[in-house]
Length: 276
Image 1 (tube, one colour):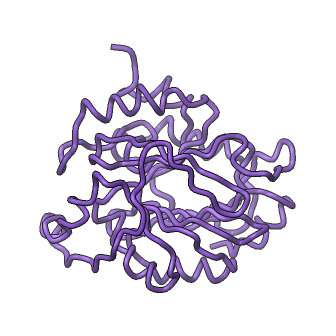
Image 2: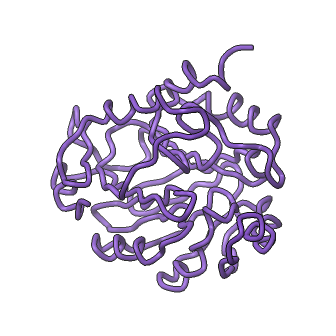
Protein backbone atom coordinates (compact mmCIF):
# COMPACT_ATOMS: atom_id res chain seq x y z
CA UNK A 1 0.00 0.00 0.00
CA UNK A 2 1.40 3.37 -1.02
CA UNK A 3 1.29 6.26 1.41
CA UNK A 4 0.87 8.60 -1.54
CA UNK A 5 4.02 10.68 -1.00
CA UNK A 6 5.71 9.33 -4.13
CA UNK A 7 2.64 10.05 -6.23
CA UNK A 8 2.28 13.58 -4.91
CA UNK A 9 5.90 14.37 -5.74
CA UNK A 10 5.48 13.20 -9.32
CA UNK A 11 4.10 16.54 -10.50
CA UNK A 12 3.78 19.98 -9.00
CA UNK A 13 0.08 20.05 -9.80
CA UNK A 14 -2.57 17.44 -10.54
CA UNK A 15 -5.69 15.78 -9.27
CA UNK A 16 -5.23 13.38 -6.38
CA UNK A 17 -7.29 10.24 -6.91
CA UNK A 18 -7.45 7.55 -4.25
CA UNK A 19 -9.60 4.46 -4.83
CA UNK A 20 -10.39 2.00 -2.08
CA UNK A 21 -12.70 -0.98 -2.70
CA UNK A 22 -14.84 -1.37 0.43
CA UNK A 23 -17.42 -3.71 1.90
CA UNK A 24 -18.67 -7.15 1.01
CA UNK A 25 -19.51 -6.08 -2.56
CA UNK A 26 -16.24 -4.16 -3.04
CA UNK A 27 -17.71 -0.82 -3.97
CA UNK A 28 -15.07 1.60 -5.25
CA UNK A 29 -15.01 4.48 -2.78
CA UNK A 30 -13.16 7.39 -4.36
CA UNK A 31 -11.39 10.37 -2.83
CA UNK A 32 -10.74 13.19 -5.30
CA UNK A 33 -8.46 15.90 -3.95
CA UNK A 34 -6.75 19.13 -4.91
CA UNK A 35 -3.07 18.83 -3.83
CA UNK A 36 -2.77 22.61 -3.51
CA UNK A 37 -5.74 23.38 -1.27
CA UNK A 38 -6.15 19.84 0.16
CA UNK A 39 -9.91 20.10 -0.44
CA UNK A 40 -11.54 16.84 -1.53
CA UNK A 41 -14.74 15.05 -2.48
CA UNK A 42 -15.51 11.56 -1.20
CA UNK A 43 -17.66 9.54 -3.59
CA UNK A 44 -19.60 6.44 -2.51
CA UNK A 45 -18.28 5.66 1.00
CA UNK A 46 -20.06 2.32 1.14
CA UNK A 47 -18.29 0.83 4.17
CA UNK A 48 -14.95 0.63 6.04
CA UNK A 49 -15.10 4.29 7.04
CA UNK A 50 -12.11 3.86 9.36
CA UNK A 51 -9.92 3.09 6.34
CA UNK A 52 -11.36 6.04 4.44
CA UNK A 53 -10.73 8.39 7.36
CA UNK A 54 -7.18 7.09 7.71
CA UNK A 55 -6.45 8.03 4.10
CA UNK A 56 -8.08 11.43 4.49
CA UNK A 57 -5.97 12.13 7.55
CA UNK A 58 -2.76 10.74 6.09
CA UNK A 59 -3.00 13.07 3.09
CA UNK A 60 -4.22 16.02 5.17
CA UNK A 61 -7.39 16.39 3.12
CA UNK A 62 -10.42 18.52 3.99
CA UNK A 63 -13.64 16.86 2.86
CA UNK A 64 -15.90 19.46 1.25
CA UNK A 65 -18.70 17.10 0.20
CA UNK A 66 -19.73 13.43 0.33
CA UNK A 67 -21.40 12.35 -2.91
CA UNK A 68 -23.58 9.29 -3.43
CA UNK A 69 -23.83 8.19 -7.07
CA UNK A 70 -26.89 6.12 -6.07
CA UNK A 71 -28.57 4.78 -2.96
CA UNK A 72 -27.80 1.07 -3.01
CA UNK A 73 -26.64 -0.17 0.37
CA UNK A 74 -23.12 -1.05 -0.80
CA UNK A 75 -22.56 2.59 -1.85
CA UNK A 76 -24.16 4.43 1.09
CA UNK A 77 -23.39 2.29 4.14
CA UNK A 78 -20.76 4.71 5.43
CA UNK A 79 -22.51 8.02 4.69
CA UNK A 80 -23.67 8.66 8.26
CA UNK A 81 -20.38 7.83 9.97
CA UNK A 82 -18.27 9.79 7.48
CA UNK A 83 -20.59 12.79 7.83
CA UNK A 84 -20.27 12.66 11.62
CA UNK A 85 -16.48 12.63 11.51
CA UNK A 86 -15.97 15.23 8.76
CA UNK A 87 -19.03 17.46 9.01
CA UNK A 88 -19.19 17.50 5.21
CA UNK A 89 -22.60 17.73 3.55
CA UNK A 90 -24.09 14.59 1.97
CA UNK A 91 -25.29 14.89 -1.64
CA UNK A 92 -27.69 12.58 -3.50
CA UNK A 93 -30.24 12.82 -6.31
CA UNK A 94 -33.84 13.35 -5.20
CA UNK A 95 -35.12 10.31 -7.13
CA UNK A 96 -33.07 7.93 -4.95
CA UNK A 97 -34.40 9.20 -1.61
CA UNK A 98 -37.12 6.51 -1.42
CA UNK A 99 -34.49 3.84 -2.04
CA UNK A 100 -32.21 5.34 0.62
CA UNK A 101 -35.06 5.43 3.13
CA UNK A 102 -35.81 1.75 2.39
CA UNK A 103 -32.48 0.58 3.80
CA UNK A 104 -34.15 -2.09 5.96
CA UNK A 105 -35.48 -3.72 2.79
CA UNK A 106 -32.08 -3.60 1.09
CA UNK A 107 -30.32 -5.01 4.16
CA UNK A 108 -32.83 -7.84 4.43
CA UNK A 109 -32.24 -8.72 0.77
CA UNK A 110 -28.52 -9.15 1.50
CA UNK A 111 -28.98 -10.68 4.95
CA UNK A 112 -27.05 -7.94 6.75
CA UNK A 113 -27.81 -5.32 9.38
CA UNK A 114 -28.99 -1.98 7.98
CA UNK A 115 -26.54 0.92 8.32
CA UNK A 116 -27.36 4.10 10.19
CA UNK A 117 -28.92 6.75 7.96
CA UNK A 118 -28.18 10.47 7.89
CA UNK A 119 -29.92 13.51 6.48
CA UNK A 120 -29.26 14.36 2.84
CA UNK A 121 -28.00 17.94 2.84
CA UNK A 122 -28.22 18.71 -0.87
CA UNK A 123 -30.31 17.16 -3.63
CA UNK A 124 -28.42 16.79 -6.88
CA UNK A 125 -29.89 17.38 -10.32
CA UNK A 126 -28.77 17.31 -13.95
CA UNK A 127 -26.38 20.16 -14.70
CA UNK A 128 -25.27 20.89 -11.13
CA UNK A 129 -21.60 21.80 -10.79
CA UNK A 130 -19.65 20.70 -7.72
CA UNK A 131 -16.59 22.81 -6.89
CA UNK A 132 -13.69 22.09 -4.55
CA UNK A 133 -10.23 23.61 -4.59
CA UNK A 134 -9.56 24.63 -8.18
CA UNK A 135 -11.65 21.79 -9.61
CA UNK A 136 -15.22 21.28 -10.67
CA UNK A 137 -17.35 18.30 -11.64
CA UNK A 138 -20.54 18.30 -13.67
CA UNK A 139 -23.45 16.20 -12.43
CA UNK A 140 -25.03 14.00 -15.11
CA UNK A 141 -28.31 12.32 -14.18
CA UNK A 142 -27.98 8.74 -15.48
CA UNK A 143 -31.08 6.82 -14.35
CA UNK A 144 -31.56 3.14 -15.08
CA UNK A 145 -29.55 1.27 -12.47
CA UNK A 146 -31.59 3.29 -9.97
CA UNK A 147 -33.97 6.21 -10.63
CA UNK A 148 -31.53 8.73 -9.14
CA UNK A 149 -28.20 7.42 -10.37
CA UNK A 150 -25.71 10.16 -11.24
CA UNK A 151 -22.27 10.31 -12.81
CA UNK A 152 -19.63 13.00 -12.17
CA UNK A 153 -17.74 14.38 -15.17
CA UNK A 154 -14.50 16.34 -14.93
CA UNK A 155 -13.71 17.80 -18.37
CA UNK A 156 -10.26 18.75 -19.66
CA UNK A 157 -10.56 22.17 -18.04
CA UNK A 158 -12.02 20.96 -14.74
CA UNK A 159 -9.18 22.56 -12.78
CA UNK A 160 -6.91 25.54 -13.20
CA UNK A 161 -3.81 23.39 -12.80
CA UNK A 162 -1.60 21.59 -15.28
CA UNK A 163 -0.06 18.16 -15.21
CA UNK A 164 3.39 17.56 -16.59
CA UNK A 165 3.08 16.85 -20.36
CA UNK A 166 3.06 13.18 -21.28
CA UNK A 167 2.50 12.04 -17.71
CA UNK A 168 0.60 8.83 -18.36
CA UNK A 169 1.83 6.84 -15.38
CA UNK A 170 0.10 5.98 -12.13
CA UNK A 171 1.43 4.43 -8.95
CA UNK A 172 0.76 0.98 -7.57
CA UNK A 173 0.51 0.01 -3.92
CA UNK A 174 4.31 -0.21 -3.63
CA UNK A 175 4.80 3.30 -5.02
CA UNK A 176 6.16 1.99 -8.33
CA UNK A 177 5.26 3.67 -11.60
CA UNK A 178 3.01 1.71 -13.95
CA UNK A 179 1.56 2.71 -17.32
CA UNK A 180 -2.05 3.82 -17.23
CA UNK A 181 -2.49 1.99 -20.54
CA UNK A 182 -1.68 -1.30 -18.77
CA UNK A 183 -4.53 -0.64 -16.36
CA UNK A 184 -6.91 0.28 -19.14
CA UNK A 185 -6.11 -2.88 -21.12
CA UNK A 186 -7.68 -4.94 -18.35
CA UNK A 187 -11.10 -3.67 -19.37
CA UNK A 188 -10.88 -5.36 -22.74
CA UNK A 189 -10.72 -8.77 -21.05
CA UNK A 190 -13.08 -8.20 -18.15
CA UNK A 191 -15.78 -10.84 -17.68
CA UNK A 192 -19.25 -9.52 -18.41
CA UNK A 193 -20.70 -8.22 -15.17
CA UNK A 194 -17.75 -9.46 -13.10
CA UNK A 195 -14.74 -7.19 -13.70
CA UNK A 196 -11.51 -7.57 -11.78
CA UNK A 197 -11.40 -5.58 -8.54
CA UNK A 198 -8.26 -3.82 -7.28
CA UNK A 199 -6.78 -5.54 -4.26
CA UNK A 200 -6.10 -2.43 -2.24
CA UNK A 201 -6.27 1.34 -2.32
CA UNK A 202 -3.99 3.33 -4.61
CA UNK A 203 -3.32 6.99 -5.12
CA UNK A 204 -2.51 8.55 -8.44
CA UNK A 205 -2.12 11.91 -10.09
CA UNK A 206 -4.59 11.64 -12.95
CA UNK A 207 -3.33 12.39 -16.47
CA UNK A 208 -4.67 15.35 -18.48
CA UNK A 209 -7.76 13.62 -19.84
CA UNK A 210 -11.43 14.03 -18.96
CA UNK A 211 -12.54 11.87 -16.05
CA UNK A 212 -15.92 10.23 -15.46
CA UNK A 213 -17.01 8.70 -12.16
CA UNK A 214 -19.86 6.54 -13.44
CA UNK A 215 -21.18 4.82 -10.32
CA UNK A 216 -22.90 1.59 -11.35
CA UNK A 217 -24.15 2.88 -14.70
CA UNK A 218 -21.12 1.91 -16.82
CA UNK A 219 -18.50 -0.75 -16.10
CA UNK A 220 -15.53 -2.05 -18.05
CA UNK A 221 -17.20 -4.39 -20.51
CA UNK A 222 -20.64 -4.23 -18.89
CA UNK A 223 -23.38 -1.97 -17.54
CA UNK A 224 -25.30 -1.75 -14.28
CA UNK A 225 -27.97 -4.31 -13.51
CA UNK A 226 -31.56 -3.20 -13.86
CA UNK A 227 -33.42 -5.98 -12.05
CA UNK A 228 -33.34 -4.33 -8.63
CA UNK A 229 -35.64 -1.70 -7.10
CA UNK A 230 -36.47 1.03 -9.62
CA UNK A 231 -34.16 -0.34 -12.29
CA UNK A 232 -34.98 0.13 -15.96
CA UNK A 233 -33.14 -1.27 -18.98
CA UNK A 234 -34.76 1.34 -21.21
CA UNK A 235 -33.60 4.17 -18.96
CA UNK A 236 -30.05 2.93 -18.51
CA UNK A 237 -29.60 2.45 -22.26
CA UNK A 238 -30.90 5.97 -22.82
CA UNK A 239 -28.48 7.30 -20.18
CA UNK A 240 -25.61 5.51 -21.87
CA UNK A 241 -26.38 6.31 -25.48
CA UNK A 242 -27.83 9.80 -25.12
CA UNK A 243 -25.41 11.06 -22.47
CA UNK A 244 -22.26 9.07 -21.63
CA UNK A 245 -21.49 7.97 -25.18
CA UNK A 246 -21.42 11.63 -26.21
CA UNK A 247 -18.36 12.22 -24.03
CA UNK A 248 -14.89 12.23 -25.66
CA UNK A 249 -13.33 8.84 -26.40
CA UNK A 250 -10.31 9.62 -24.20
CA UNK A 251 -12.51 10.13 -21.13
CA UNK A 252 -11.19 7.84 -18.39
CA UNK A 253 -14.09 6.03 -16.70
CA UNK A 254 -13.90 5.12 -13.01
CA UNK A 255 -16.79 2.70 -12.32
CA UNK A 256 -18.40 1.93 -9.00
CA UNK A 257 -16.91 -1.57 -9.13
CA UNK A 258 -13.91 -3.02 -10.93
CA UNK A 259 -11.17 -1.54 -13.11
CA UNK A 260 -10.94 1.70 -15.05
CA UNK A 261 -11.77 1.92 -18.72
CA UNK A 262 -12.39 4.67 -21.30
CA UNK A 263 -15.42 5.87 -23.18
CA UNK A 264 -13.67 4.87 -26.41
CA UNK A 265 -13.05 1.33 -25.18
CA UNK A 266 -16.67 0.91 -24.17
CA UNK A 267 -18.02 2.49 -27.32
CA UNK A 268 -16.18 -0.06 -29.46
CA UNK A 269 -16.02 -3.14 -27.23
CA UNK A 270 -18.84 -3.13 -24.67
CA UNK A 271 -21.39 -5.70 -25.94
CA UNK A 272 -24.30 -3.64 -24.57
CA UNK A 273 -23.29 -0.60 -26.62
CA UNK A 274 -22.85 -2.13 -30.07
CA UNK A 275 -25.19 -1.19 -32.94
CA UNK A 276 -28.30 -3.32 -33.07
